[in-house]
Image (cartoon, rainbow, N blue to C red):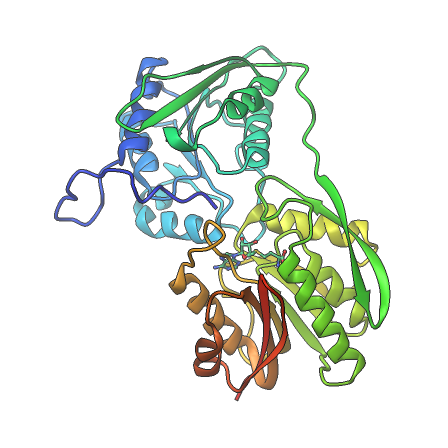
Length: 396
Ligand SMILES: C[S@@+](CC[C@H](N)C(=O)[O-])C[C@H]1O[C@@H](n2cnc3c(N)ncnc32)[C@H](O)[C@@H]1O
């Protein structure tokens, strides 16, 4: 997920509560004007618009061009739904297209057939996400020599030469814009015909499955959390959970991996509970594609195993699961977005049947026991090391 830097200096918001573009968004729009302008009578692409400001600017630029559309794509279902709510009128008239279908679409699938030549984007945090974005954008130019220009901005302190190099693998011309305050944009033009094809990254994880060590392959697309490497917290959770399964302390006919990332926990559930319904679910379209690729690589696709693109299990039925696994998102490794985790705990509480269990892993220096007790039910500590703590809670 791409989140705006809270340090972005916003001018005072107007009364109607729609914030004006922040500094990064302003530098993107300024660089786009200098690169030829937004107001061409053709589609505009927007990517990763966490605030809606770029989409709003693109819609304003296309006013009066009846056949041109704004296509605003994001990996985050939460972001896509927020844009759909804010721009409901423009969606209804067909002026704005958003990836709000149940199934996630890659950028080039979503924008297939567009005549757009310009993409406005916030630079994603992960280089692998930028790589996929660049390849997706270059693919949209087609093989007929049409140009495609990406204008992608970020906070200068988060920008590195590696981002230029990644863009340069798919585009022949890459340069930086003038800075605006503490933000800057990169401009990439002239898609390379010889760019490499998109590929999932590969890795593996050794995990106990009902007491036997098994090596599960991992696949990672775009900016998915952790890439194709297993997360140490997830490994600690799986060791403890597997002991409990072997001991008969945990049984499940329906199990959920909430926030499945590259799919390690989903793959474990599919392997360790061969008769169970297993659901992997994530807000991030890259995670959904990664989890599916991991299941396929492990030979664990079967009836009853599903992966959904969903914000906090919104599409899952209440009281439908006996077991929910959650390795929640932490920001910058230490600081926690408490409301995000609370929302996911509430989602787990809603989806668990009474008597069902949540298994949860968190950084050991943080305290989650009271939160789980209040939102789910009685809590037990299942494992702890210097970095991570695994808790289980029974839904009361
Ligand atoms: C720390 S990662 C864990 C990934 C994986 N389960 C693992 O153990 O390696 C947290 C995951 O939660 C997802 N996530 C964040 N907010 C979410 C939400 N509201 N609904 C569903 N998933 C969410 C993120 O996209 C990310 O893939």
